[in-house]
Image (cartoon, rainbow, N blue to C red; front, side, top):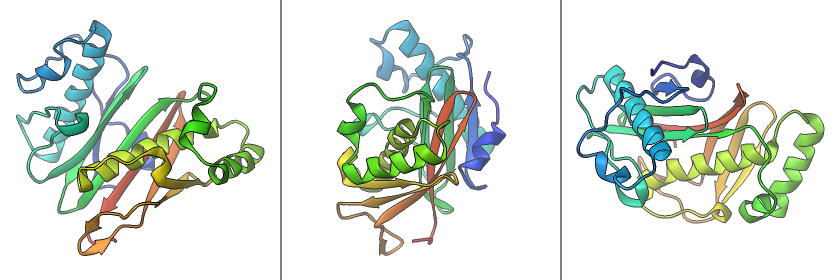
Length: 226
């Protein structure tokens, strides 16, 4: 069963439509164009993918795009209908999709992760000393937050916002992400950014939230905001 999640309004602006699910829907089915992405997948992977695609189609219907399909494209990114931007995320107990019209929002990044510390060694692999120093300070202010996981999720959202604009890979080391305790973050790009509305993007601004055992991060670049 998919539903509109008011909590995502805390991390995404009004033009973005979101739909979430907290359990896989056994009645959900894939369109033929979506099927190849999980043709060889195990049952659990297939179920989460199918429910996430059901979220995406429900969000598109709310946006006013009926009978749409969302196949997998380059680098496994979702392929949205013409004129639409969006993002899909799924983790244990949560699937979500966010969509918007491209003439209102140029790109969307959305990521959800379990609110738990990263495995040993992962933080060092995805961050630098400066980013970790910020995490140490934040941990003293808010020890209840797994700041390493928030940083990881924010970097995932950065990539999801970046790729539709560029079609290029962006490594964890290619964005300097600074988290703030007020639920915001800024990702300064360390590589040349995409040109949007005639302006080169040098950074992405995003928001984060911790709720119901999840870390959720998101980015939306409004049209002509750069």
